[in-house]
Length: 428
Image (cartoon, rainbow, N blue to C red):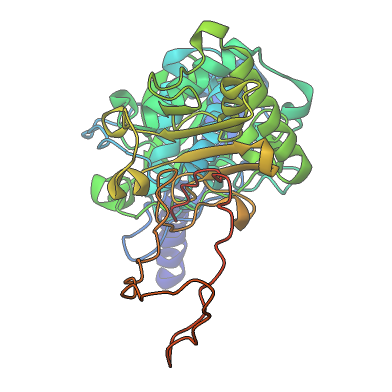
């Protein structure tokens, strides 16, 4: 009997303790019980899972009341280190537009909210538990109808709601700042956030570290929320996100990309007033040596060249991206040719019209549009054949025809010189 009573007493004491320790956390809000999974700290040897976003079934008022009961972490909240985006101009454009879209659709047209969202994206891309590209982080899980990491990527918001051009400009500017080293310190190393009118299930496993307007920010508990955990090398290989094509030229492909590039080029050149067009050299009205902006659409260079050349039957325009390296006179030396970024040559007498890009600087769809290594020769500077020493004059007698000396070749007839051909400057 004593053993039975001891066992019953043990069960009566230990069982409730185990339920309290391992069972769900229960909170009463507005006379309603809310069960939240118990807090779990993931050890360093185990990579924390990135769970699909799922929410407690709560009315907004109940969710706000519950969120108010969750205390902020009292531990250190150090700022993240600056992040600097790398990659080609195309890769950087894709990352910037993915970041801008997340900022707009998650925080609206609010500068501080956008900075906070951008910092979370940067924290995620540095953390081993998430994708290693900006676009990969933003659109993680977007192939699902529910459970995506950023709800705007899978709930139809991209189709239902648009933003004004000036709002996109502000978001892209802020995205470029965040990806260029700007840090939003208040959220520290937060990797999660949500609005205060919802309660996601993952909330109980993270530490609440900051609030920015209506958004609450969280980081992982334990080692995975400390600065050393954010050690992953970020990949510059940003994917093309087709869902962003209506808003981003960087994410267009195929015919849509070609059309977007042509439109951008036309708009860029059309914006130039006649007096803003390049002027030819003072010594040669058919030659232009100019500096171009490498951030402009490459197609705009060809339109600029044809507008500058106008109706000239012969014309050549050569361009560099560095003003300090742009020559001011002809002929060009080897270094100037090697640094050339773009060239346009025209000679209508020979039906010659050629546009070339330096493909190390500007990627082109066709290899025939790329410059090739070639020695640049100024006009009328073709190498001349070495003169053949003249044979000693022989005495001649009128009316007497002499036999040529042995081994002497007949003299070749000279052919008329070909008119000057266009000066080509193909390098690489």
